[in-house]
Image 1 (cartoon, rainbow, N blue to C red):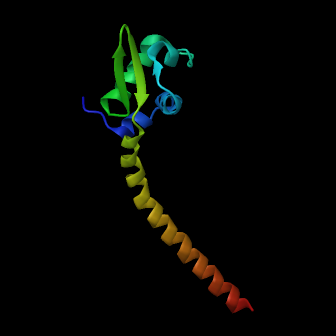
Image 2: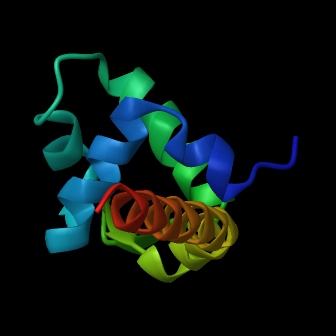
Image 3: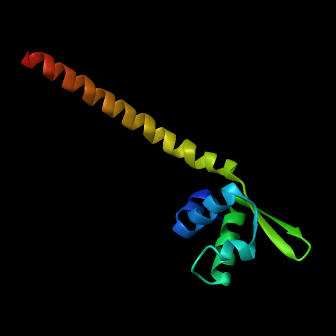
Length: 106
């Protein structure tokens, strides 16, 4: 199954994992220690984040370390930006309307 960034960030636990790893590289046990869910559940979340490119996993001896690849979030930023322009235009039009209405009442 092909995964994308939007699927990855749809889950609050995965967003929390990304937030945690944005500040430091951690092994899987250290990531799991920050959550009140099972280690296998964390591993599934890590797998999804890795499959969509938001995490990189490096093997160092027996340990697997996770590091965030937040550059992939640009895809989300670009998608949201198109709606930001839409709402900026709507709010500007509303402001212009309100200014005209205020002038009419004077």
